[in-house]
Length: 410
Image (cartoon, rainbow, N blue to C red):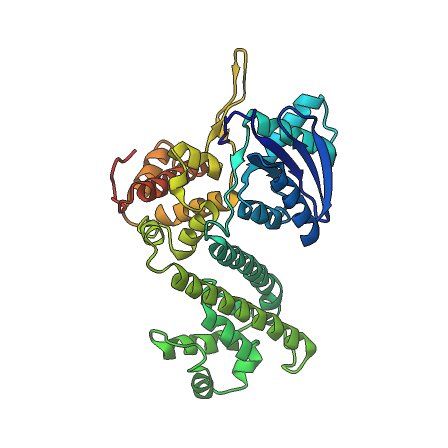
């Protein structure tokens, strides 16, 4: 955790326990007894609270625990009013509460007390507001892209495990990847083998010619699909039946999700095109536009981290070890960090180790050299590659240098 150690004698400390409908507030002024406030989560009460704090006439430090997105509006108002705003780790808050109260009992007033204690001790993080840091649009693009990608995967699995096995199981071998929009366009027009075989081969090739888009040796591909349909084991359902209508409905949903995903990717490129950090991140093997967008959206300006270990901890790539007396456990990833960043570097690492020649692939190969069939070792090697990729991303942005392959290989 990034901590602050400022003296608090001449500062007013404010702890806010955030909830959906109301906020519990505990205020500590120097040399005075602490007191409570409770406000509803609306504009009038926000204004009343901010005006009350302004009238104190002293430097004000405010802290809170991130709670869904309910903390964002009031945090923005507090920053706009010129207060120093801090964020408290949920894990640190829970551990401190248990230590102070010798139990797991939890309620809003008690949380506010513990947050005030942590703020006074400096065990807080500076709050970086996405709107203030001008990364809010990036976050919305990144999170919406993730939501659509998850929805697309869910619909794809429904097609692969239910509809296609019933009505046209052999067609799946023509689907090369989830970005093959032509495949789902074709499947919408020709959902069953009968929709193909009711035409002659030449008629089918002519009807499907424009549907499948640009292809190398298009005639051979369509001929292969036609021959496959002739020997298909798909159920003989009527093309006008409700079953086929539902099949086409799910296919259309898949096509719409692909179109939405592609539009977000184009918008992200337009939004970040020319941004030096965005361009530098894409120089790293395995990192494309979406991974670069996720890194910038979730981490903001990487220059705010004084050392790469702080960035690794922010990602959850720092090592944690349980030790007591003579016992020392195995060091493992803490995973107390940003899961979306960690997943992006993990996925980028999977791409990098499959490329022909780069330092990430070399590190992976050296790691698994002693036992290439060991799955656990391969997983650890990929984790090490992902952590290295995070270090490289931090370094090229922090020092504003281009990516150099095989520089400092280790």
